[in-house]
Amino acid sequence: CPSVHARTLLVRRRFVDARRLCDETTFVARDSRLKSTPHTAVAMFAIGGKKDQAKAAALAKTPKSAVKPGALGGVTASHYPTLSMYTNTPSADISLETFEAYALDRMRVLKAIDDGLSRGKKQPEMEFLMNEETGKYLKLSDTLPVGDTTHAFASDEVLSKDEVSHFALRLAYCRTEELRRWFLLNECTLFKHRFGKLDSFAKARFLEDHAMEYKPISADEFIAVKQGLAEVLSGMMKRDDRDKIMATGASGFYSVPFEEVHDLVRGRRVFMSNGQAFVPRDQLTSLVVGAFRAGLSKQLAVASRRWAQHIAGEEKERLAPVIVSLSKRYLGRDFGGPGAAGDGGADQITLKDLPGASKISFPLCAKNLFDAVKKEHHLRHEGRRQLQLYMKGIGLSLEEAMLFWKTEFCKKIPAEKFEKEYAYAVRHAYGKEGKRVDYTPHTCMKCISSNPGSGEHHGCPYKTFGEESLTSALGGLQIPGGKVRDIVAKAKAQHYQLACGMTFAALHDGKEIEEGMQHPNQYFKESRKALGFGVEKKEEDGVSAASPVTPGLKSIGGGSGAPVSV
Image 1 (cartoon, one colour):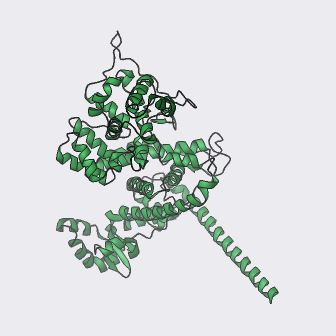
Image 2 (cartoon, helix red, strand yellow):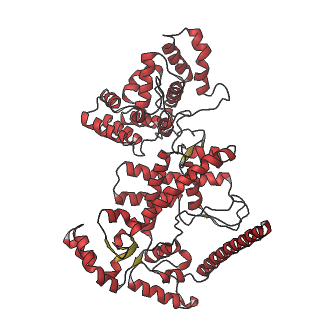
Image 3 (tube, helix red, strand yellow):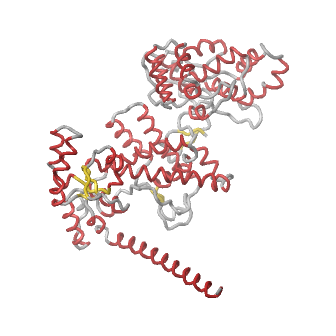
């Protein structure tokens, strides 16, 4: 009967709604309980072993007024670091300016991490680097105050800079597999660093808040599995190391669901009993980072689908341009303004200097384009644009740039055709035509993102050249064979900027670009400095002339940060 069926559906709907309401009420109550009794979560699970568990349990039973600040091992309940797994997106509103500024600050940190990893920095050096960068740009305690109408709209939620910036870059780096891989690697490195800095009680709170079932084993459990643990550890390490771990007793091991450590199970590097894997305490960070990596990888895939299905179309006039630009944003010096070639404009390049400079100071991308136009007397649009802006950035004047392009192109075409089809583009690159924008030279990221077709020469040769072509090009620079193989190996591993930096070192007696290779014009500037060109002009009183202010730069997030090219 239709009426009976309708009543049945209504009852089901009301039941589902009631159950959903019950679940939401339970969640709110649980959240309120944690806020009102901050030690309860700590007492439920303490990482440091039985002694810490007993200490936390005693603190939980102590009246709130009797708990002294710092009783939780140096991390009071009201000052737990707000380390996040980034599972819940912030729901409050935020201005686009603050959104972008936060994202750029996080990108500075991630790019510094990527540069450190690419340059093979050791663990202590990486720890120092991450402490320094997060201290400047991305403290966990940084928030937008409630009711701050300057940056955020009316909201009851306190926005964490760490979470806002993470989700902003998640959108920016979810769009391609290469971007996702880069973001995942550096976010995991940052998360591992931050988690490792937490003390026992902060880790306990974190694991409890995120429902991670990693628990220290009891003394009885340790006695039951002691022999098995010793046998597994004997196959993995030296006897002295094994004995040191076993001497910690029950507090040195954790009981973990076996599906959480499938890589250890597969490699037979963990003892298992009754569906539980018993893992040494020093592997806890790896387990948590593994869970973080798995969760973030899935979330990036979801974000990629949502971007394609909704955000790219619905926000194409407002948010989408900001998001797309973030993954390509250059955070270093702008080489497009006056005096960009050297310090204070001391080393200006002229037309007669170009052949010699191209042999000793051009990066491979610019040298490839310069040699191509000299050989073919023509370049397609993207190649012309890249080389025009590069030569503008090294200090070549508009008049001499026009003479260079006209001289080369008119070896194959009449002068009238050059004036009609190509002269406008040269003037446009220098901001003398069209909207009269002072365009900046291409960054390394822009070159790497290019995909030249047949007959085109733009982009990054470390990416676009095959192994044989790259070997031949490096050999033509008189780089020794051993170093050529190392550079080609780096390029093959997709470390294109590091490969370019290694080329610089090979051609400049081992000198390196301290900031890391970020821009073709940076390569030229550092090369001229290393070769003794462009010595700063001195004023009559012996004081160095001040460098002119580079146009097109603005400071993001406060004043102390590096300039951002806009």
